[in-house]
Image (cartoon, rainbow, N blue to C red; front, side, top):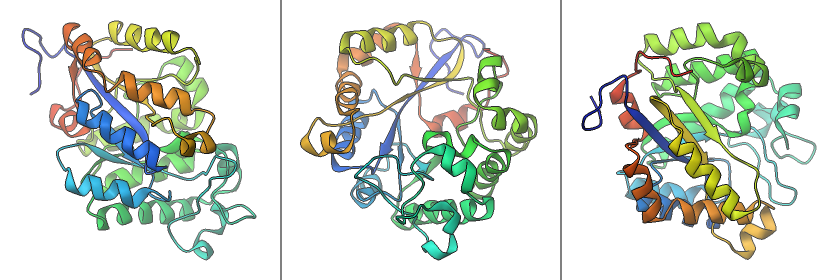
Length: 297
């Protein structure tokens, strides 16, 4: 068991710092690799349909010491930088728009996607990553597309069970989370029972911050969240990027992504976390740890 010095299972605070969107672009790949090497970021997830997937897959195969998941992708959200499915388009016609790309937003996914075609595409994404030698530890869902309908939540859980990989899923749900994710709430009891039966761990809490253009405000928000961590396993999602023309042409979030990279590659951030008695873990260690019995919500 992975317990902090002087702490017991009930008191231990574990944190997965997780960088999303690897494979999206070269600037994101370089930044994510830097953050992983820093020791502050403990996990990353990869978008297999994206143009720069192969570059990150090569890195992952050559660096199995780091922790990698698949960022199961059903939408392509940027205006002039888009991608289609991994599998042949004629097999998943409900997943693509009139231009042949994956739907631009999760509302469109929820309206149009057929669950059987979703499963075909997502299996193809996982299988492609495995074929490229990516050592996988978990699965999650890009922009929450897989928790927009109950049948898609079921697909998400079925993939976890079929590939024997944990998924980003809450152990319990607050009233606010139930309101925000009604499809997940409707499937929560059955899903958590199936996942727990197979020994797949469940998160106590998820943190993610998308607002805040002011770097000082964002940094304070992140550091306060770390100060306020409760016992259990929390995942903090960040988005790393390297400020560049490439990233600026893709997304208006380029400055925030660059700030995430800088803050979560900084040795002082690692020192801050350790001084507060928080233990950084990745998804492989989370699985070894098991699911603590306390309820942190």
